[in-house]
Image (cartoon, one colour):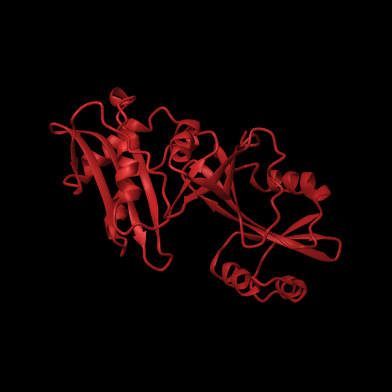
Length: 275
């Protein structure tokens, strides 16, 4: 098996697209045309897909597309080729995103964690949590810097790869051209809980962007109370979110409200070849 760097309109690129039989062919062409660091996967005379690399602060993100001709016994060779490709890159983690109708070959790898999409329909479980203490709930975000610091505090004990760049993410939140849903829980003037998300009219769904509770106030039903607020808010439509498989407390919370796993959107593993 070989990984061959894709060059637009090259002979290799033309051969790959000629062989490709997929209902997502137009999307494949678009991704290959708009992105650098695309490598075609070739076994003998057949092209079996491609991978595309993106380099972030502490991880390499790999978009992986495999055709219907892919055979799982080639998995080990593919992983070896990927290791050779990135062996001089000093990043802590590798993440894999499967594109379109790609076959999932990652669930047999030791040490891998998956990000799943969960969803609940409009017939939401009415959990009706009750706060153990009287706190104030606001639907406005008055200070984004305060909210950013709050997220960094709440997620400080997560695994390295689960700690997001909250400053960048929350600064982009108000810029999205979508209706916002925000519920901030205060104890006097201090944020102790928050849940924020969007309404996505085209999908007729809500997207839960983040939920967090101050470490000193956990066990007071704040997370459940905020999630109930979010789900029951107008309009009463389905809601979806993404969460890592190892984030068990969060998953247990979502399941209380009827969320079910829909699909796997990403896989992540430590970069063992970085040295």
